[in-house]
Length: 249
Length: 278
Image 1 (spheres, one colour):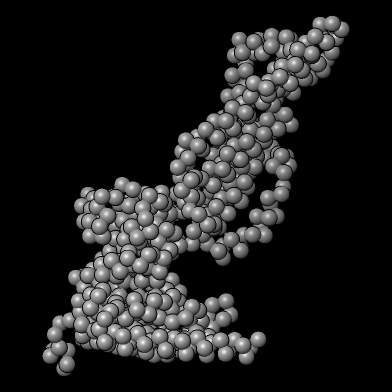
Image 2: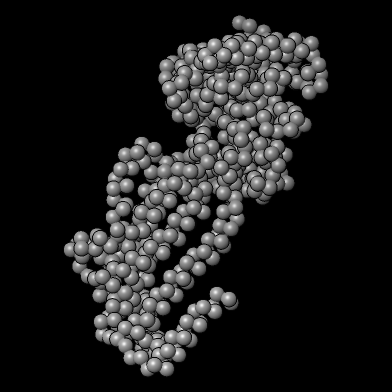
């Protein structure tokens, strides 16, 4: 409860200032105006449309980028020569800011979901690959030997040994990638793509409706917070036991 | 000729070619010569124990048979064919049982892994898993996770999983090194009983000289730098062995003395070499 003291006080001060001094501004809005605007975009359904667009792009991008990253992580984590072969390329491409490939993707896909999803997938690929590869190559070597001696196939080794052993850390990778996916989705929409929360944020700003802008901004923050809380909850639910059982090193 | 006359005791099964043979095997790891020119035959149903100071390559020997390592020179032959990859009927029991078991699977789940690897039909698994757990005395603990089992029980579980492979050869890498004395003796007898009843050949690495004599038909003594076989001791002790009478047998005591002297000598030699290098 103590944590709420500061934000609540700030909101009250902002409201008080707006009322006392009668500030009218193109870039600021009073808390009450923001709440009214929020009620407005909820009532006309536009908030849900834009949220749906952003989340859809984020989730699909995460699935594609994270999925590819996971496959690569397993291959590079298990096959040392391949890891050495790919090391330079990974380190060369990884530092590229995801948003910097927007012009290329725009050329290939034009506006819309496909362009946005491609960029999100690119951004989500790297954290899953890097953390996933570390997780896979960090598996207790004894377990890999057990799988060899028992004569498991490569696929069997992956599904029965590698994935379960690395699962808690792979989930952490996906949690990070999920946060990245939302950031990149909103960024792409703000920068270029005419859809979703980011675009509406810019549209509100350029049409001089700061109260709508702030309402969307708060909503984006809430989504980010909610997403992380959900994934943390899921992690504890799914791996509370397995996480503790993770092979001691 | 002699094979026909001798009784069918496993220790005397001299028939045919060796089951496992090292032929001039050398191996370097990380630029260091670990094994040099190893020649060694293991007969069918034989129980071989390997002893030697740490760093003499006894575990490496075992991993070569398992197909986890490959020789630089020479070859390891199993059943007439060179070993190139792990064979399904060679089982390996690791010393660090807690690392070799899947912590996210129950006891029966861990045994099941071996059957899954062999693609045994699902319907046949539960009965055979139960039988194996019964065999190693873990019937009551089928649904427990490894972390909930004691060290001795975890090692029994690993043995059960290896038996699920229906191995002709059991490779054991200091399997009881981390267990207390009582548990160790019980497990020694169980391994002897299992090997005897299933006709399994056993390649047993240990640094416990008494354990080696107690279990083995032959004891291979190795020396380090580079690892080589220096001495082979035949163990003519009667079977079945008994923790009390076998260990009091004059032959047991004689062998113990002989092995002890041998190891001590090679350690003194070793220290001398290291000091001359320093």
